[in-house]
Image 1 (tube, rainbow, N blue to C red):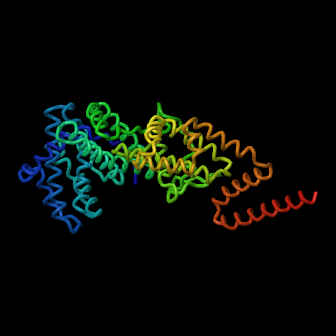
Image 2: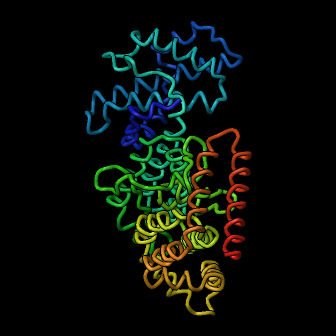
Image 3: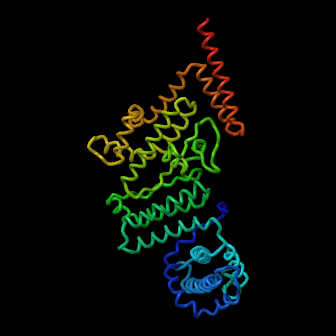
Amino acid sequence: MYKSSSFQYDIFKDIYVCDTLEAAIEEKVSKEEAADFCNDKSFVSDNGLQIRKICKEFVTYFKILHSSHKNNGEKHLSSKYTEFLNYWLKHQLEQSAIKKIGHKDLYNYINSKYISFGEDGALAHKIHDLGDNFYSMIVLYLLNKEFYKFKNNRDVKCKDFLEVFETQYNAGLKRCYFDGDSNLCIELRKFINLCNHELSQKLKDCNNLGLSSMPKLILWGKSNDIGDNYNDFNLIDFQNKCSYIEFAKIKKEKYPNLYEILAFHYNLPYKSGLDEKKRYMMTILHEFIQYCNENKINTNLSSFMREFIDYYYNKSIEDYKKIFEECKHDHNSKEHCSLYKTCKNNFNNDLSLIQNNPHNYIMQQEEYITKLSPLDFFILKAKAMFLDSAAMSKYSTTIISIMISFFLCFFFLYKVLKNYI
């Protein structure tokens, strides 16, 4: 289970120091007398010998980190090293494929014995199972590890750093938005800011090599970000996030990229290659226009269109202008330009409206709804209302069928009476 409301992930700022000191474990573990108590326990697991080894390495690593912190001070190694050590212990258990019962047994044993080796009470209440938070911590651990490698080692190439960043950042977005780990979102944005601040020149050089800049991560409802009055979760359909309203749901199978951008609250997943980023952005726009065309009779479509344009398109408009300019010539055969041409061929009027003034695209939809006859408009509103209520009922199929039949009868009756009169 997540402890997202209170759990803190800010334990990796000294990862470079911790990883360097970890190398000393192998040399010192056999001589560390404080770890002898690990031999006294018969662990309830098939991996008893491996757990005993992890126990000894844990005590040795603690002694190394504690000594470094005590001798060199907070600026060299912060007191958060104990939280990092707790993550390290979980990582060793997972990496060694130790069963959960073995995890619990070791945690309990260490906590019962920490007074014998945990100097100054440094480990008090610090050693526990991280639960699902551990998998978010892996993301942050790997991101920070690559950051320091890239920062301190000239031999690490832009492509290598940004490919790792792409994999871990996008995995983090999914845990943040699909699994509800909101604190991970905050840490991801802190990491982006760290990269932009301390790797600014390196990232400019990467950009010149055709690689993407750091993404912008907007956290809805946070200070300095857009407010949280948005409709996106009303449009998508995934576990624990679905709301039933008048919108036809955007299905992942039919609109995978549009679905994803809504699921991420209009935050783009990172694509390390510039051309790949352009391809992804053109796919989102194409799916958006396609969805709007297929749902013109949706009386609330314009609300979604306005939200999409305000919260996503306008914030990426400079990137889209570059794509449109690059792809206006027929000879450009790059994949994002092929998508642009397909979009233009299928939805020329829609794309032109968005390119020239995206809010005219919204007005066109509003005018379409306004021009509907009173009866057509009433039927659409009633149908939407009953689709909404029926979706929350286990009898939804029956109710929808009855109501559609009901309104069709009234519609044909209206036509007959109109001709008769």
